[in-house]
Image (tube, rainbow, N blue to C red; front, side):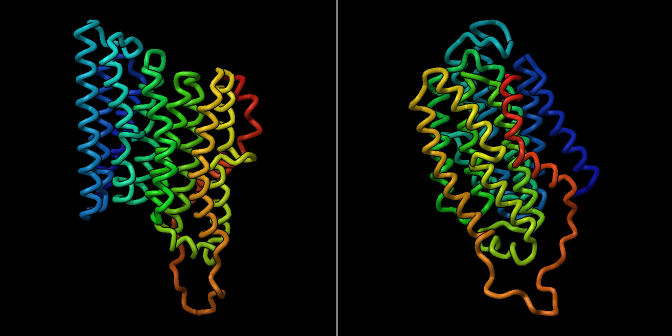
Length: 347
C-alpha cells in the first residue's frame, strides 16, 4: 500500500476512535464509529486476495447493519426525549437497540459470528488491529451507557460470550481463529462487570489489549499462523517460545501473572454484590479457554523436533523484523499482579 495512503487511513482510524471516545453527543459518536468502520476496510484488504476481500465484505455488512440499528435507536430516542445525550436514554426500546448494535460492533455473543471469519481471512497485523483497537470506541460508549442499560441483556450476552468463546476455540487449529474466540470470551467478562463497576471493564480491556498485542507480535515475528508451524518455534527462537508460553498463561488468567488481576478483582466485585452463582459459572466456563491455551503451549513449548538441524544451508530465513516494543509488552503482560492493591484503590 502507498505509504501516504496508509498514513491517511491510520490517521482517520485514530481520529474516528478519539471522536467517539470524547463525544457526549450521539451524532458525533455515530460519525466517529462510521469513520472507524470505513477506514478499517482498506486495512483489512492490505494484501488483495479473495479471502481478504471476503473478510472485508463480511466486516462491512455486519458493521453497516449495526450502524443502521444504532441510528434507528438514536432516532427513536430523539422522538421520545428530544435530546442526543449519551448518558441519558429514557426510552427502553431505544436503549436495548443501541445496546445490541454496540454488542454487534464489539463481536460479543450472540452477535459474534463475523469475528472468527473476518480475523481468519486477513493477515496478522490487520487481525491485531481488529481485535484490539476496534474494541475501544464501542466500549467507551457502553461505559457511558452503564447506568441505564438493560442488565438482563448484558448478563445473558456476557455468559453466552464466555461459553461460546471457550467452546468455539476448542476444535480450532488456526491461531487467528483461536485468538478471535479468546476475544469473544474476554468481551463477556467485560460486559458482565459493566453494570457493577465500569472501571474494572476498562482495566480488563487494557490488560486484554496488552496480552493480545504481545501474542500477535510474537506470531508475526515468527511467521506463525497455524498450530502445526508452532512446533518449529523451539528450533529457531527459544526465547520467543518462552515469552509466548507465559503470555498465553497470563491470557488464561493464572495467578502469578497479570491476566489473573482483572479476573480476581471482577470475581471479588461480583461476590461483594451477593452474586455467587454468576462468578462461579464464569470461572468454570473460562476453563474451556484455558484448555486451548494449554494446547498451544504444548505445541509450541513441549513439542521439539526429533533431532537438531545439522544442515549447513539455512532452512528458515533469518528474521529482520524489529521487536523494540515486545520486551515492554511482555513485562506488562506478566508482571503487573503486585500492583493490584494500588489499582484496587484507584477504582
